[in-house]
Length: 234
Image 1 (cartoon, helix red, strand yellow):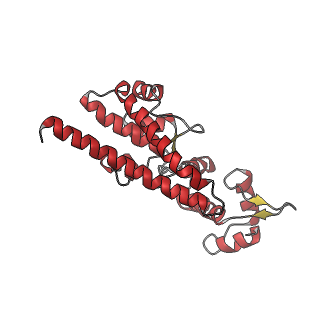
Image 2 (tube, rainbow, N blue to C red):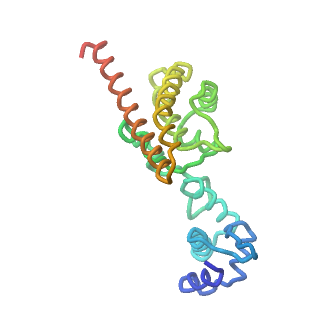
């Protein structure tokens, strides 16, 4: 969309918005429309959604642009901004509850696009700083592009729950090694699929990886359960 088309979409809800206002919000880094080779702005639907969020936050909550920008950053990282008053962003409820941790059948469904700072991960998981350091030391959690992703939160919360039984990060190196072997097995299967020509090859490879990963988690859970049943005479 051109800037004029964006203005026409916003005016019914925000009568005071102007082209100058949109350009100002762009200059402040709240939106980043693409540019044509000749320099004209091209706005996406996401740009329009962000503009609506900014304008509504200014009109309804009287928030300064600095706080609105922090809220947008939280949203971009898959978090929930602490509205209406400014504060630390929150992990979505589905990932913040220990009882909501996924089971074997849905462990590897499409992950939420969540990116957490170190402080946010510690707060959401309940881990202590030394516990997180140990998880990183043993390769159970890693930073990617400066943030911790949704899987890191799931691992952190799971380990935090296991700590109640006296299990520490050093006891879990076998899980890391087993996961690496399973990853290698899945890659052996999906690599030939991904190398096939055609636009659907990548999608087939991703679907095969999801299904095989879920099956491996189910198999692992069943083997552990069967082994414990034998040990406990159940």
